[in-house]
Length: 175
Image (tube, rainbow, N blue to C red; front, side, top):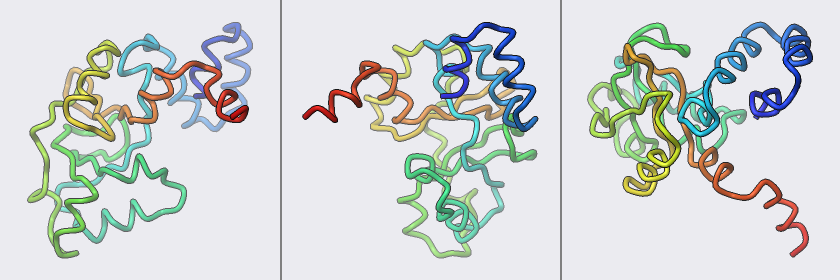
């Protein structure tokens, strides 16, 4: 959202605001601002839950239980090689929250990986994102760079925010 807002500001003002921000957050926003708004890169969040393949179900569950994690981000854990912050090491797959509930706490995420869903590239057009979400009933879709490193995740919230009119919240308040 911050990247979307700043994209509408004059460049000089944007840079002043970014200079006042935490360096890590400002870097994320700069990265997001380089993508067209009608692409996976323009929609994605750069803060998915990322784990190692040898992490356990218990470790992953502890991460998704944190109260600052939104429900849509808590629905899936993305498994990569190190490093475990975006841009990560090579993307290996996804483990869905529902699947973790069916396994013992000591089970390794590597044995639960969903590798069927292909991640998308940052320049994937939004129309393809919409079709992918609809075809696979997704909550989140991984976004990778040319080296297959996880750089972010498009969530169903991101897609809905893009599909609904800008004033949809105001319309709800009127009803």
